[in-house]
Length: 383
Image (cartoon, rainbow, N blue to C red; front, top):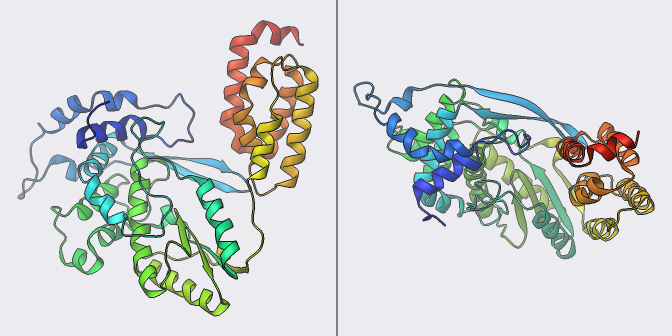
């Protein structure tokens, strides 16, 4: 394994963090990381610009390309990726200052979605673990009388790029010190330039956005921790979702007000429709995953076992409407679908699931393509 330093970190950002993970596998950027040194040496040969002799990339403006991606039981979300030159330098800044910026993020004691570097996985940054959120919610329900649920309204799309410097250096300092020698100001500049000077929003998808958003989220946590007196034992922020346990409803309302004040400091607000207080209750959501794993067909993948699996999958989906049961099941049952003899019934079922749940599109296409390539003769005979 290469040394874990800034250049190798930058290479990982380029190779495994450029495209949104929702795009199919034909979109990849490994070569962008492979030729990092060559690209950097040529970029550095460009003449300095202006009276301050700034690097040329300070003045380079690009734009972003966006697409809508379906979400389970929710409206589609707009994902984006930025010009690769902009991404090259934005990810370089974050790589060079990663240790310093991680110290800033670690000031939050309630975040369960930290920007942790991943040297061997599919992404440069480890993706948030949804199970950790579910486990914590179960824990809160066991220990508190009331549970607060709230999230930051249109978080990524609403982040004010100047607020990045506020998060890193403190608002008062950042407003008085606009020099690009301060890393927060430089991240602000390149973030703006990557979207043609726009100061509102971060592209959803690139790992650079995840790291920047976590800086802002952590900065919001800090005053909430002090003013509301919440700790890691009673509160959690999962990306932009807050969950807090309290013993009285009055205390819960006070915490919500504290979250709103802190978010407003960074030109953000909480989503009123998704902010509510509930009485605690029994909370356990993991059973269906164990059940799905237990019913996945085993070789020889005969018609009867496939029938039984699809029937029980459909029933479990109906019983857990708030969970994306179908997507989880398809991810874990690929082999059975690829090798079964009753392909036609599987094909019809997958298409019908897709009509109701478009989030399975990438898995569905992968299964169809691989099945066609490996079982084409049998596939055509089935008709």
